[in-house]
Image (tube, rainbow, N blue to C red; front, side):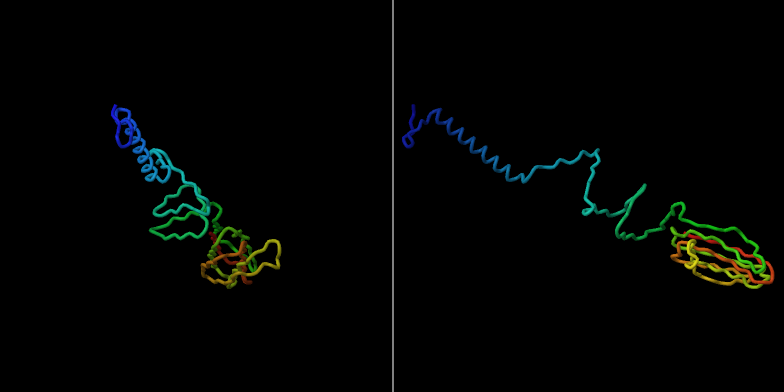
Length: 201
């Protein structure tokens, strides 16, 4: 048996095995330390390419959307919308949000009055009235557009008033009242003809 004269340890096969074991343990510790320093946290696996990914954000943290977006079906948009037109826009109006009253030309008797309406404009934002008077045997025909209140006569007030004699006029009203009535009044002297068209949208 060989003995190391400096350390007093065996320098044979048993000593070689001990040194090899220590070297292996030291190398393993170095590998573990290096690996831990390179991986700050657990990795996140990406979704397979054929699977959909759903991102859920709170209302306080909405997902920003840029570029061209195609929207189909029913969609609710709230808040401030910054929309820049590119090309022509097509805007459809839901059924019921449109008014078109055109009974054609009519006869009004001597010194008579005829009421047209009232028309419900509560869901509309614009009103157009086209009026025509012809065969004016009694002079001018007067057209009075009332802001109408069916329940309280004292709240009915003229919104507009004009007279026509063998003439036609088209008038537009922005933000009309919720209810409108058109009154046609003929003068004394004979029957006349008139035509009134009411359009709202």
